[in-house]
Amino acid sequence: MNFRNVVLCGVGLLMSVSAAAQINILNAKTPEEIGKKTEEQIAYDNDRPLPYGYVDERDVLWSKTTWEIIDLDERVNFPLYYPIDTNNIGAERRSLYDVLVKGIKTGEIDHVYADSYFTEKRTLKDIEASLVYSDTTDLGIEQYNAEGRVDPEYIRRFTLDAGDVEEWRVRGYWYLDKRQGELRYRMLGLCPVANEARSKAFEDDGVDNKVELFWVWFPSAREVLHRAKAFNRKNTSQPISYDHLLNSRRFHGVVYKEDNVQGDRGVSEYINDNALMQLLESDRIKEVIRNIEIDLWNY
Image (cartoon, rainbow, N blue to C red):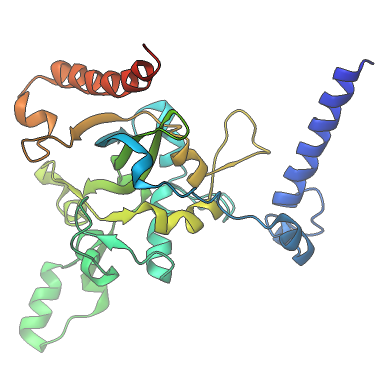
């Protein structure tokens, strides 16, 4: 066995040991211990999201803000969508929507806004109107008219879940770091898009009423997203955190808006009723951004 094989075996062994320590499946004495780390493992891991380096404003040679749509019907974006049925899997696997909603409910994520410009802050009570809908049946209305009260069995309650989310919208900042001499990307916010919970009560209407449920300031949610793991199809022993997945842009997005002189108008505002041309315009915007870095090294 040559030196290269020895190194590869050593790396593989270290990766397998790390994976076992992470999910504890090989050392668990009971099923309840799977996915739980011991105090020694937690102290040894010191697992935190990779901090962003400081970027001086004078080092930003060029920048552009873009808004993208992540379509969850595309296979490459499935890790952001699944699992939608959590009855038969462990608590360590949750969809991106479930992770964010849980973080908002527990207070770990408090920078929640109404729009992508982060001007109007929202609370859990503010966004519950879109996430939860309660409706009284006809029998409940009759009971209220007769007795002035409604029994709980006559109240229907509909709640949005991960399966209702159709797409994600993200806002990011592309900039050219002249100190590093490279093009970089920094995600600023992300937003789930779905029909409001009210549409689940009136499915026969067939109205497509997709809305932006809420915008999360991404840097403030990194701790929560780092602890949550997305499914890794190539190696299930090494799940990837949502923080790493989003920061490394391991998804496919279509640009639907960029900052421009027309008040950041969207692509659909100047290309109407032509999905193909809108897609080509999105590719053109991406190509312009990519060419900025290439042109930097042309003399």
